[in-house]
Length: 139
Image 1 (spheres, one colour):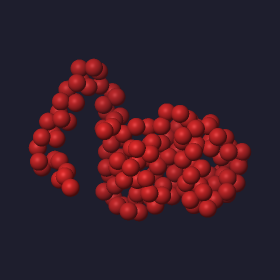
Image 2: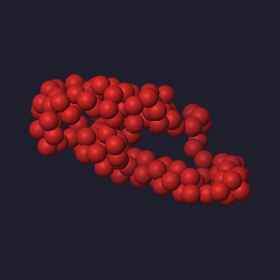
Image 3: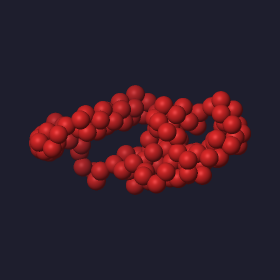
């Protein structure tokens, strides 16, 4: 199963609202933490998505979650174990963040490849799954 990023822009907004409420913050309080207005927070929550990862990272930091809490769909969050509102970095500090950052790097590098390179990358990753040293133990 592949990780999926929200495409409907208001899904990011829904996640911002969800985690804002979990933190017990009003839109005005979140805006104050971010140095933006309550109206801008409301716009984010109502569908005008932040335009770049830097802004998403700032919002995530203010909400004490990772960017993945804000941009991944629920299925993908459950797949990697971050559907719990407690920040993943608090649950598995260094390892979890290394894994998530590694996935970002892997996807970023994959997107730089042409069609032939992508086919080769898929083969090599598939080969790695056949080597016990590199695979998870099934429960």
